[in-house]
Image (spheres, rainbow, N blue to C red):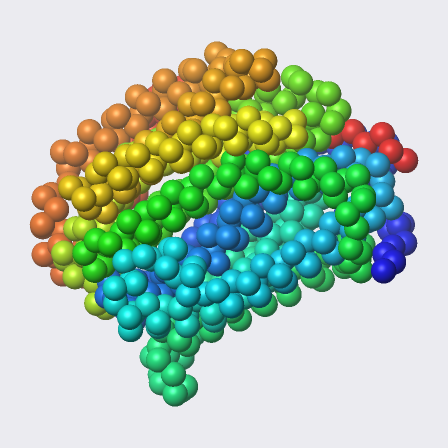
Length: 546
């Protein structure tokens, strides 16, 4: 099969602009802001989606079934497509981008053909062996034949979503490599919209199907929509080429070599989530849902800070390594660490002290559904542990691209294996006595273990060491976060008071406290001498290819 190579764009915009000899300044802060803004929209729509789902399913056995079926394709998506594949693909992609449009297009064609064939086979196996996947992810359902059978059918409906969303991630990586961050970051919104539409259709009873089945089909439809909205952008950039099955292309083979260890290195969180789901399926009914709802609140700051920083940093760090610009490389990591900690530490404090009110507002006041005060309390215990994990997740996302930019996936693989082992040991030691809270605590310990090892490894390799700026920002951020924590600790009423409030007063109090807390933290940083301009960062990208 031959590759169709589109002509070079004549204008010096988009891809064509990369092929000039001019140096071009890239504002990483602005790009990070774009990703964070789109991610915020995605997370808000995600919370709206979960509010609708909590109204529909609550924390019932049906909710557990759907969340297991929804987690399975998403686990593999994050494990291979958004995690390992992106980390192995982007650094090699940046090398071929520097060689010119023709070389880049041949590489993309060869890799997309092979990737598509592998995806097709994997999705087919997943549908055929759906019962085995259900037994793996929720072994506690095996003793409940009806629940196990129903979950297996849901898995068969949702699993093809993996194929479409993996291709979506592939397309998003191509766009990110050309400094197009907004559309890939916006794409997840379509998943949430499709699921909300499916849930509303389930509520209206238009289809003669169970509501959970309708929502499962909504997952499938979302994959198609997410891929479709990115194809026009790739076409305009001249990168929507005919796939070619090629295993001899040097770049394709290099991605394959890097991919194997990257599978674990980039996906510790998903493996830990799998462990949590497996063990939670053996606990009290609702445990999976409690962890899920707590995780949804954690995902908001993780997406806004960690994912945004990691997404923007990887292509830029890869380009810096290719140019041998070590000063810019170290400066970019310092920028990521400073900005990440400045945002993550207060978010962690707020989530810890404000866990029950936030959950009560979102899943009791706004949804008005099946979530009870007991469910809110159980979810809040998990959220408190996840709050402790939050800064660790951010550090992992900032430090990991430094390895991948050097095309080193083996070292983070070793560290990830240790982090997974920590999660497994702590989970097994605590889940029978602490229940789902012990599983969440294990996640926190795993995240901090991985972050610590990543930094030690970079220091030993000589790639990076903490500088005075990062140390100073961290100290000021810790002090301001401590002030925020003390304020929340002594100003918030007892948890039961929040649960007993009527919906409107509860919403009003929550919004007021959130704005007050943000104001106190911001004023503390200003008092300590920190300004928004301290976090602006850009580097000059020079293309030597003509």
